[in-house]
Amino acid sequence: MFTGIIEDQGIVKTFKKLKDYQLVVSSKNKFKGIKKGSSICCDGVCLTVHTIKRLSNKTELSFDVSQETVNCSNMGDLKSNYKINLERSLRLGDEISGHFVFGHVDETAIISKISPVDDSHLLCIKVSSKVSKFLVKKGSVAINGVSLTINDVKKSQIFINIIPFTWKYTNLRFLKPGSRINLEVDMLARYVTKNLKK
Figure (cartoon, rainbow, N blue to C red):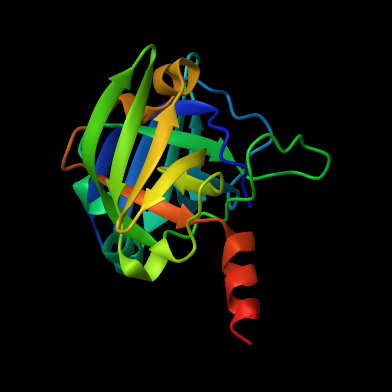
């Protein structure tokens, strides 16, 4: 489980097909305390660390990625030198500054428009009816692993304001109209919606 507060933007070294896929990410974060088998949220996808290589000025993390994960996320779009959002799994006693993020992508949604608003940026994201029922104004959502608050919901689109800090310290600043993003709905909203149907 994660909080959607990004710790670093890792750089994709390689993403290649072996028996499954293998992702290798380089990070300036030392990621103290992680070990083989630890969970890391990579652009909103919970992955298990396969190997760790600690160098003098960076850490290289390797992950096995299944075909199912590639099918259900935007990981098939990854290329060398892409920057991805990284977050270690939540530990007992950690501050929860965002919301509970599981690293299970509900769908890949499409950025339809990005508009500057003063120093911030307003994202307009096209979503399917499958997930739109879980999205409400002022509710939470994770985009590429980033915990965000929904400004508004209009039919098949949601609007999210990205403040300067988040824009600078996540890979959201590289998005363009047409970009595919990993979207995870708030699990609490999912449970509430399911219970209301009973």
